[in-house]
Length: 111
Image (cartoon, rainbow, N blue to C red; front, side, top):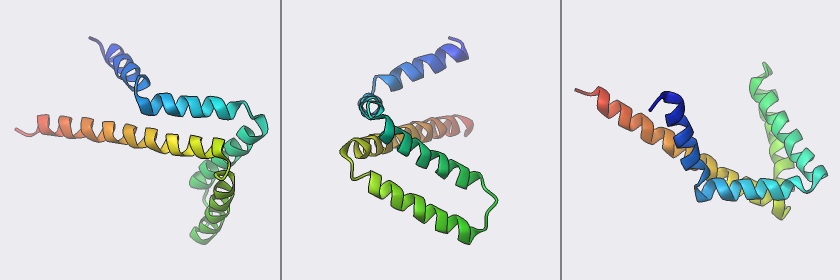
């Protein structure tokens, strides 16, 4: 099996997980509420821009706190909260997959 086929197989496996399916459903539900979706996307964009910025640590901390407060306010909405919690579970699963792959490869490298 080629590399692309292996990747497609892994992606298909991931897409069949409970974590992916719940996250996908939560995002689809949020997408029905355009204004709410745009507000979440705006905050996510602000987060990414802040991570890439060359601002001082103090300024980054201040802006991060501001963004976090806005996310906290938004997360009181059940639809947003569902996206956040299912997204966290999905990201945790993906992280675990990468850790497992790394461990497996490292064990093969040890002679």
